[in-house]
Length: 252
Ligand code: PEP
Image (tube, rainbow, N blue to C red):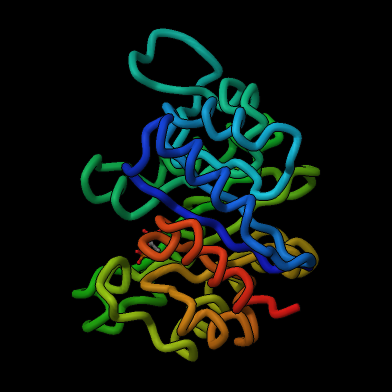
């Protein structure tokens, strides 16, 4: 199973800058045997796709989706619309959406299922707040969020699903989660999947770590058992910095 590294631009880079980023990143020397994707704002998907041309690295990812196929949902974008851009992955339940847009676990579950049905790999983000971490409630929160998020997924689907463990206190804070703590968190997530969907399914799910990952600490995470890659925010905004991170993660 290849490691998976996903750049999350968040609300950065409209179509003009997105095209430039993709062209610059394509000039980077990139490792083989690793999957790399870039999660771009919806409005930049066309430009990113155009700059990629026929190239498949990096894969295109979206940052959000709506669960219905079409209809009166002003401002929303469906999985089949994302599919028209050749999107392979889509984030769901990022903590910024849960916090600022009141996205609930029920909504996350519906989005993940809609993506899987459309053949797009959902990247389901879970993680605890700083207060929950202090109260040692991390495992409880992860069990709740994971159970809810997979409730509508089909374990027999050909389309995989991915989890990203992102402790909210580690995102953009420069205070990454200790790798052994992340390892425990990943075990909890995988344990829930195994209980609900079976060991075989759980063993195949890639669980990424996200939260202040950079080229100085990526090796520590990628070499930790049970951590199958990373979701990278700040350190993905510069294509050369993200290129270095990819090379560091998987040295050739
Ligand atoms: C993120 O928001 O998904 C993230 C991991 O951000 P950062 O790498 O900046 O902490």
